[in-house]
Length: 171
Ligand SMILES: CC(C)(COP(=O)(O)OP(=O)(O)OC[C@H]1O[C@@H](n2cnc3c(N)ncnc32)[C@H](O)[C@@H]1OP(=O)(O)O)[C@@H](O)C(=O)NCCC(=O)NCCS
Image: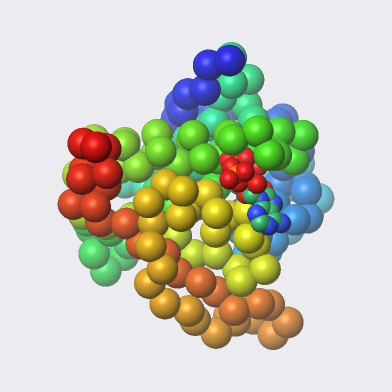
């Protein structure tokens, strides 16, 4: 089983669309940013926009070249050395270590290829699987923030710096 990241591809639109229409993925990853149902055409348009964006890459997580999820690094508007990581895995593949492996690859890309100084992650308080994958990848707790919308849980913020990452990978 080969897991790799590749710039999100138009040919991943159908699989991406299926994930976005998963209410849990949509809510936890995109904070209700898309109207559902989300069509394959919507997905293709979104992917086209992502591919033009050179500052904030969005990757397909591929296993043996098949789309199983997505992971992104969004550049901060106020600090061009700071990125926020976002990710989801198709629910058919949950619990197989895919997010854990993909995050390590995204950190490597961010710190070594994009020269990021810090990468942050924001997780709803009721998302222990996501907290777990961030901590396993070396992120540490930064702070909590109140819900952005009525009825949502609090947010927990995590962070890893380039220095911490390089120390971690050098053993
Ligand atoms: C969060 C998510 C990306 C995890 O993907 P995944 O590929 O299943 O993650 P992994 O298999 O690499 O690791 C999950 C870890 O969480 C643990 N876990 C899963 N459910 C858990 C729970 N309810 N409580 C505590 N830990 C849990 C698993 O045991 C595993 O830890 P381990 O490797 O030490 O056993 C996936 O569930 C998902 O896409 N969720 C919906 C979207 C989302 O939440 N995105 C993140 C937004 S911040």
